[in-house]
Length: 119
Image 1: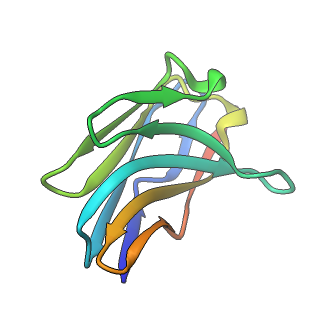
Image 2: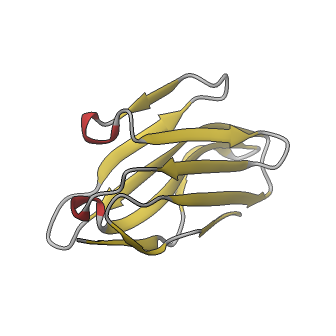
């Protein structure tokens, strides 16, 4: 199996910064695209940012210019640097990974990490 372990969430004031990390471990042939999603209570989970194996990135319009996604392939880790945080960024953030294994290819999810931005 594959495990995704997130860290770095917490409470921050508006305008502050946080850095989320997500480390993948387990039996993998290749760690393909990785992404961060977020979900607020009563709302659908939405894509925040994604990064391909080759490094190309895409972002939700709401976070462009404030958030940066990056990855360290040697460590099987993806990061989300969040700057200029706003109260509306308050959500549970989930790591997602597209993983190729000997038995096929599928998505895996982390357990989620809470980010709370106070006004």
